[in-house]
Length: 145
Image (cartoon, rainbow, N blue to C red; front, side):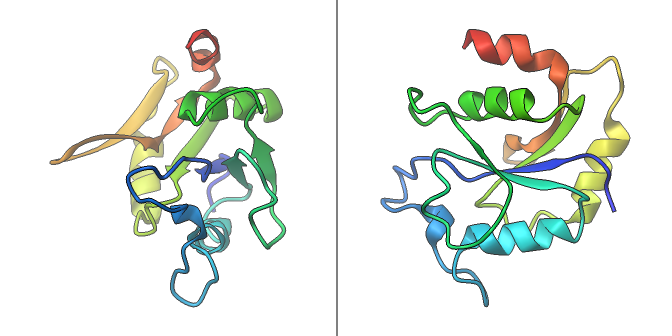
């Protein structure tokens, strides 16, 4: 089990989708978010959900809310998370990536180094900033955005 906290980002606007993808049913679960949360709890000691509001979810979880004055932006989530969690590093994952498995997380952790600010997943399609390991050293940059 990974000791680093994992934060599931589920506060996006879903503008291209036309509806809130975090609330879509997935497998045997009423929502994709609940599926991801339950799955990630088997891999990480601590799992949090970053969102604009926890009211839309019908299950208990550790939610970290974005500031109400900020529109939909992952940077607001990063700021809230680093202000809420004291850890030096966090693993982040977008709610709409249910097939990212433990080997991907292990690869990101193995590639990490104290000299780095982040380790981001990369595939042939490009970089995936909402699947990565981030260091607290980036908080100042996130606060400036």
